[in-house]
Amino acid sequence: MRIVLIDDDQLVCMSLKMILEADSDITVAAVGNDGAEALPLYKQHNPDVLLMDIRMKGMNGTDALAELVKEYPDAKVLFLTTFVDDEYIVKALELGAKGYIVKQNYENIVPALKAVHSGQNVYGTEVMEKIPDLMKNGDSFDYSAYDISEKEYEIITLVADGLSNKEIATNLYLSEGTVRNYLSSILEKLELRDRTQLAVFYYQHK
Image (cartoon, rainbow, N blue to C red; front, side, top):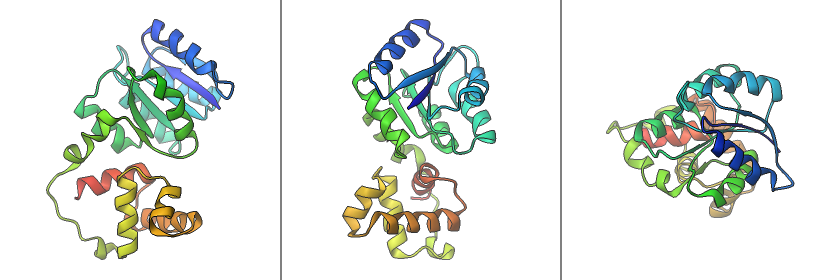
């Protein structure tokens, strides 16, 4: 797994690089110190996951992600930060970040990267506790108007709870292939890009 790492703290970069490369499955292809480097480094190295700080002295992580997804909408970005800031969490989710974890939990970084690489979304406990309240806007939403069936709605709620396709399949006694098909149909009906946007959509219209 190839990683590009961006953090404006040189000491953090050095520490993270050592932690990551202690795992034989991970190679840090490049290190940057400003969000403005995200797009050029991504173009140059085509990493499996971009691991990035969110609050930096130059361009912050969410602005960098906004720029990145214009050219690489399927980019997998995991935010690693000291700040569990409401505004940053909402923006990161809306832009399609695949994860948001805090730096203090260093033991979770490698597992989080591997989970994101495999297609899962990863949010630290501190972030997960905030998401439902942050995303509520009080608007009611008629899923049936978008031809969303009861089974599809059930899948939407499980995605919003952070379950993987395998876990959803187990819960609903379906095959993973069937869950993937349902999910593709749901995303098409709601005109959403991925499961992260779907989770955000659910909480915004809960």
